[in-house]
Structures are given as structure tokens and as C-alpha cells.
Length: 200
Image (cartoon, rainbow, N blue to C red):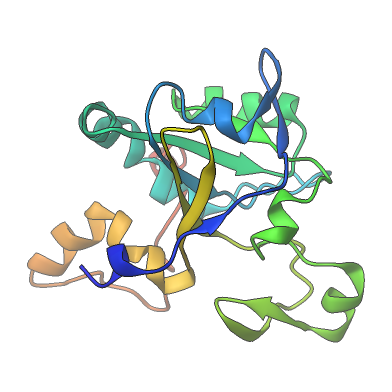
């Protein structure tokens, strides 16, 4: 209830993304719905690394969105990697949700999940509502929620980062019910991309 009472901030900037079928806008990501959830996925230009934590979160999305899309909520993931790399990863993982590239445009920086070179060099940047050690990471993860009113104006209504995204990971709740819990040697030490468990 308190989250829904937070002030809405109008999005005045015209954000453009690269999608598999060409350029699209933030408004396009809503489709015909009035609410949009964006997952900021850590997929960095030029890197072969696929974030296991982001992937774990995304493994929950396709099954859930068939429900929440019927409750007026659209979903899209956004990364800075080129759309060709995004499509490669999406197909490998078998995901069907919309996933677009912000490239080096402002979107990731404005929503404080990507960091300027000077911040990375300093090892600290504004993230998760405070100065946070970033260990030279060019990108971090999070969720941002947007709403569109009857006039077509878009508002940023909420963002959460880091441990605030854990409520989206339903598999954790199943593990937490079991005697061994998450059975970790370190935080998420057991976690892999879902197509890599076969090598255990």
C-alpha cells in the first residue's frame, strides 16, 4: 500500500531502444496496457558474460507474465548490449518476453543502473539509493515500474535494486521451505544458467 502511495514522476525524456524489429520507444513497450515493469538486465556491450542472477530472475518471467499481462501490466527487459547479442542470449535461454537494447543512450544512466567511467574508476557510484561500491562494474540490475495515463503521459512510479528484487525469485521461496534452505557456501554460490546444471 505504501509503495502505491509514492509520488509519480513524469518522464519527459523521449527514450528510444533497439528491438529485434527496429527502433521502439518506452511508450511502445507498454503495448495496449497502462503499466510497465522493466527489468534492468546486466548484459554489457562487448562482454561474453551472462549474469546468472539476472538470468535466474528472468527464468520466472514467462510463466508469470501470462497472468500479470491480463492484469494490465506489460513487461520488458532492457540491457546495453547490442540487440544481436540480446537475441542470441534470449534464444539460448528459451525466453519469449520482450527484451530491448538501450545501447549507450541515457535510459540506463538515468535509472542509475549503468555508470560513467569516472565512477567505475572511483569504485563507487549512486546505486540503490546511495553511494555503493561497484568494483568497476559498468552495469547493475534492478526493476523500474512505469504508468501511462489516459493522455498518454508516462510516469516513473517505483524502482528497486539489488536485494529489493529478490521477491521476484519464486524458486528461493521453495528452497526456503525445505530443510536445507538455499544450501549455500556463499550468496547464490550454487546458481548457474539453467542450461549449465546438466554439467553437474
